[in-house]
Length: 87
Image 1: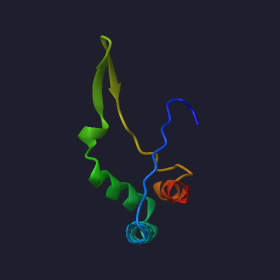
Image 2: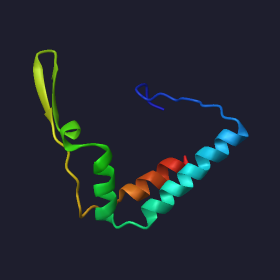
Image 3: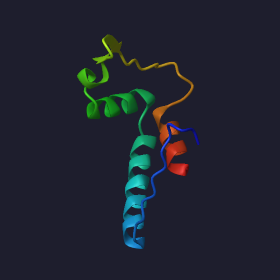
Image 4: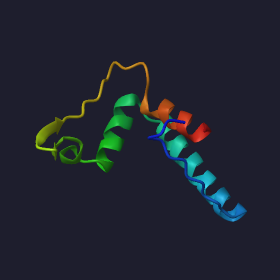
């Protein structure tokens, strides 16, 4: 683990854990039925574009951040979610 990474431990009851697992399964099931384009549009609905493209000043320098989605990527957001959920 790198110095910039933080590890958080959440302790849940069995009932809470089962609830979270069920939510995860439902979410993954929903995404698995969507095309890559549908998944991208679905996720964009959570994060309007104005929040993805922004400017930030740090120590007198203005940084402009823009976000782009690569439709030709070999990786999908679904595979990323599965990787995260498996950890």
